[in-house]
Length: 147
Image 1 (tube, rainbow, N blue to C red):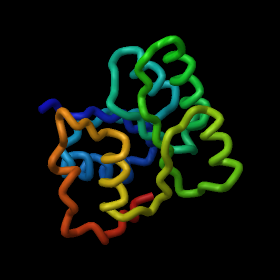
Image 2 (tube, rainbow, N blue to C red):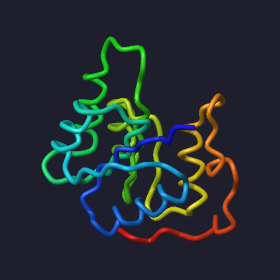
Image 3 (spheres, rainbow, N blue to C red):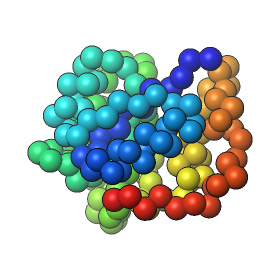
Image 4 (cartoon, rainbow, N blue to C red):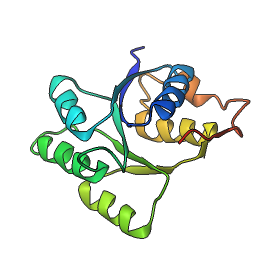
């Protein structure tokens, strides 16, 4: 079974640490970028199982990054799932993300099991199931607070 590799675009180092721990728990590899510009360069170099984007980033917003990803995928049959992770999901922000091609959303803070379910929705492959994502965690009610 090959591991999923996530590109997480997050400028907060404490939040990166939390995501790293969660990704390890659910048997996923992770690549971090702290800016949208770095994320755009990273997608030129490798394919990712999913991209998790914060809204507020230095330089460009997560919405702008999502638009760039979708533009770069134009004409391709494969589409990388993009997940918006934000502490402030207003109706307007959600509308902007959806217009940019974002597939899913998670609002911070979140429970560990919410994160597991999000990854399961976006990464599940019947021919190579990730058993760590399929099995509900006993600590599923814990809340992730780093912001």
